[in-house]
Length: 480
Ligand code: PMP
Ligand code: PLP
Image (tube, rainbow, N blue to C red):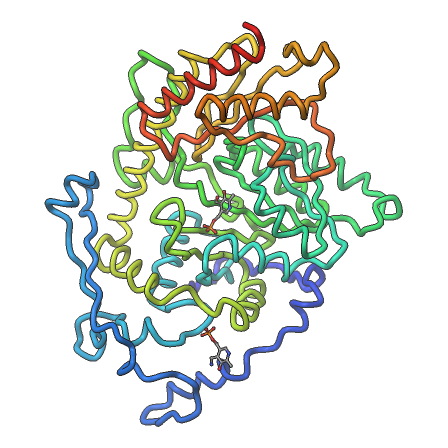
């Protein structure tokens, strides 16, 4: 977006990997710019003809704002139509002829415009040359970020418990992980500063880390959300040590209403879009005066994970390096996904309808989270089980005081007791994730014990039954 009052992003050449610096523009994608010449007949590209795409049209039934319930959709939902030649026929700005062919690695211009406008509405980055580019989801975008920013042998910083796939993306690339200590608000800036200030290249056998991977909102697995002040403090440490921040934010719009406990009157939902946007905790992107943040966005948790569509936001320099990588890997997200999302988000809902949808999700997730917390309060033995109500995301992180387990006195290790509780829960027909699965640094010694439960997948009745089963298993295990 043209904006001449904001400064430009800093240059980050010195943080780019050898791989990123070696990438040239794709020879064939480069020739595509001549297609704009009026009257040109292209025999140069390798684009198949749309005649041979066996899809004439796609119809999709979707809900109308604001009545998003499944029943309302079945009765009153709209059917959106995407035809092969809608652009030629003047019916739409996007059609199957375009969506189903090869495209630019930035993703379709139509959906990219929507993503860019949405980013401006929500985050309004404080520098001028920010850009977006579409991705095939954040998993792929993170793999690309590692390729763009790191070398084999580097260390990166992560929350000490993190999305295990994110760590497992790094390991085979030869990238090692340092877990930064966390509290109820996630990353502790002082702890991050200490790690970086005391980095011993010789002892570590690696240069000082220059990348932070963080999940600031509704963190997976801990459910923690960094406050605005916490993010400012982390950003300051990043500036001090010249750290590039990758913020992975699939749960940003799963920020819920405050938890008030059973019996208390629920806080009123946001009265309008402005109030809703103001209620959201500011992103790292929104405070990124240097252009040292790459924000990973995903439709997975707010529309559908199987769409495999997301986007990134970063400075023009960084986005260009990502696009060069996508050109020779994922190319662009699926055309079928892009056209379906465009029909829904741009042509049917628009930005206001999408915000209505996000408010709807906020209220739905609030109900689910509250149901899970009520079940925990009702069933779990609080002598040994502790938790903080999550403010965002899909996860509840339950700490278990394993030292009170009879096995601990008998010399059993934390690992053995965790395994015993996990297997006993499975025997009692409830599946939870073990905290140790999420260690950023797999060799780190854990002193605490956690289990992760999600409220996203099951109904309130099923959640209550599952927590009752887990409570029984804890009582048996701890002889309570
Ligand atoms: N391999 C070869 C030999 C090709 O010619 C092409 C397309 N021109 C591709 C791979 C790209 O395939 P895809 O669209 O499935 O990524
Ligand atoms: N990042 C985090 C922190 C996640 O928890 C998940 C999903 O579990 C993903 C990324 C995956 O996102 P995507 O579906 O966009 O690849």
